Image (cartoon, rainbow, N blue to C red; front, side, top):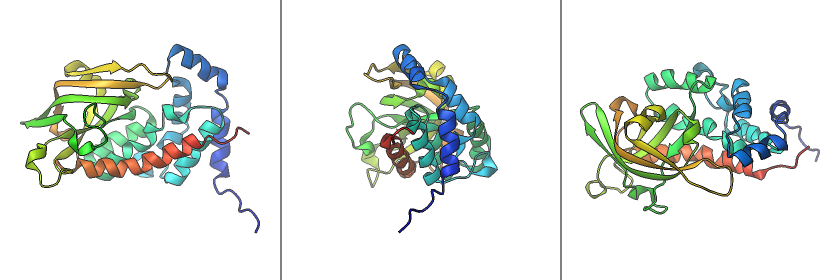
Length: 258
């Protein structure tokens, strides 16, 4: 049987050509400086590739996970590092599928245009192992605000994002019927949070990966920043992680350079 033509060759060629403009030396220098690849991320954003999965009505390309995976493959095939920006492609999925129309109308076009980066997701904690339902970061509602206290760890790209999805417990574990209940997702403006109760502590590691530990001390977030329904956040996060796992698999395949 003859090989079928690659239906995504046009995407492959365009992404590969753009990524090839940033050679190995560019990334080696950044790695030595522990710096972020701002130039290639901006170029990919300006070309619309990082908005691939945002619907057209919100300023994106309206493509699917398959096309997004092809984009990831080609960035790495050219010798670049898609891990620096892949969060911009999938993190918005939680907002897209579960946010209010007002939230989507406000945030998604800005994310698509690169005016705002939503590359960070705060889920993992230092003392809960792999059981996300046992997270200890709490958000207590007081009037029109949530007051957040707790800690997150291994949170990537906080220093290169304006927005973060934060998973918190809004109902104590002892008071819920199922342990996955009572968790909520809040959209955090990182710039404001840094000034109002969130401390970012970088974690030293052996690769140029922006990993951080976050501390929350009475950080106040508007109730309007709640994504979806309070208490249903565990489902929303899992929903978003499906695309994350697929895109990460695509970028670690690391095909042979042409």
